[in-house]
Amino acid sequence: MTQRAPTARSLTVLSLSAAALLGVAVAATTSVRFFINGRAAANAISVNGTTYVPVAALKAAGLNVTVTGGRVDLNLPAGAGGQNQVAAVSGCLGETLFNGVWRFRVTDIRAVPSTYNNRPGFEITAELRNATEQSLDLTGTGFGLTNVNLAFADGTTSSVESVAPNRDGWDHNRAVLPAATYAVKAQVPGSGTPTKLVYLRAGNVKSGLPWTTPDPAFRVDLTCRK
Image (cartoon, rainbow, N blue to C red; front, side, top):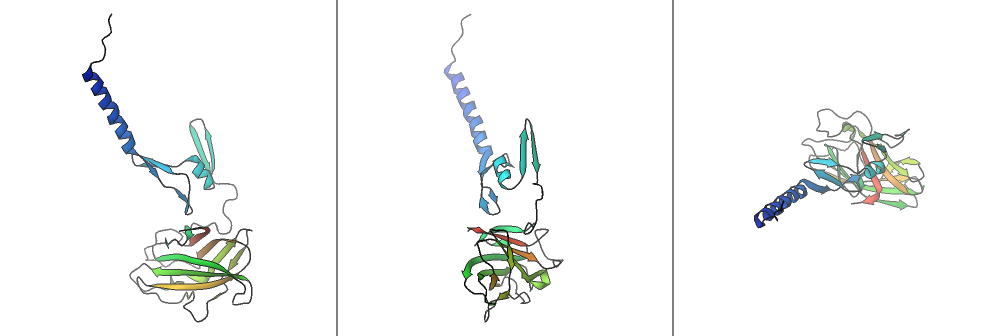
């Protein structure tokens, strides 16, 4: 039997079909930037509206990942948690963090030879903005001054000892008007390399406010800046 060569019309149809399929694949798959605690990790991809995260990125986030055949197992590492491991709103130095009520941004942290209590340490500069439509104070919403903590590379932690004199300071009893922002400063004794600032809630959060997270604490990674 003699095999007929493809006609120009059939070749054209095949070429158009292949191009159409390729166009659909390209349109349906997009790259998605992926961050772990505010730091860029391997990009994820989105296929037809579903986002897929690389196993390597999950491992970098602290999960134990095992891939066996057609099965993927994800497990929290044994003993996960501990000090500063809270379900907080996380980000980098200079990044505005938002828990639905307060916008919080740490703008600077610098070493000082002597804190207000005559000890070497660090001075924190930050700002808070009331994102609600009512006047609020930090204490009334579950936050307090002494719940501002620094964590260091050697695993030690230290808490704020005082606010800046003759300034607004970190006045957790101060009423903040809707949309108002005020700069805050505080000093923390300690030495070494600070790696995280954790602003925990001091008590029960005020109900009736538009919180966007179960635990509205803030965790700032001081090793990255935005």
